[in-house]
Image (cartoon, rainbow, N blue to C red):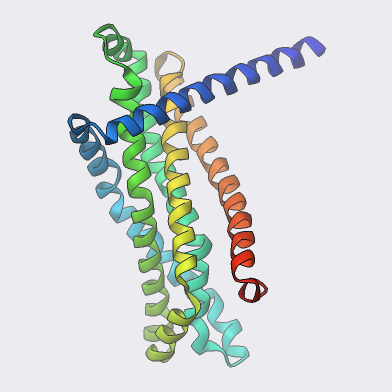
Length: 269
């Protein structure tokens, strides 16, 4: 029993070390790719694959989240005569938590799975070794463009999902439930502050990096065969999902503390 536990601990420490080294090499290669114009075409290609092709999924996610939230909350607010404050509830819920988290989860499923499968297949078919044999750093050539594309585009997709979520809540509140349109937008504008939008953008940077690095790492170190690639995709999504939740909790606590420090009266509200 002790031998099994010890082997698991040693394996866990080794995996953590390999992931840390992989992340550090990716970080260095990523920033170098931003200052090297010849690496920009690789980033542009990944931005199209990761960002542009994710727009329909993010659009539907944001719209349905806002609409569902409005449907669920309307009756409770109407009982208290506060249905005109629907914009406040939908705006804050979507911008602060639901928009960033659900957008990141959708990207972890769509983008993260694709990155893991692509790099995992390249690993199994020894294409990564071929890149390395030609004197090219595979992390700089294969991983860094994908990570930088996720880093740059995840915040933009979160903003897009926030807008669609607010419009989804508007469609249900105004068109279906008869809430005054002016009141909806006025309470939304009064409730959603620039700080809330900025915090969601900051979350997007962390979420994008976590999804890309974890997915690429799993693809680089997957076992041989189709089963190994499939297992790596599953592990990448689970690890990305857990990291999104953990990062969201940590950033929410840090953001709350910072806000309460600089604006103590508002931080108590």
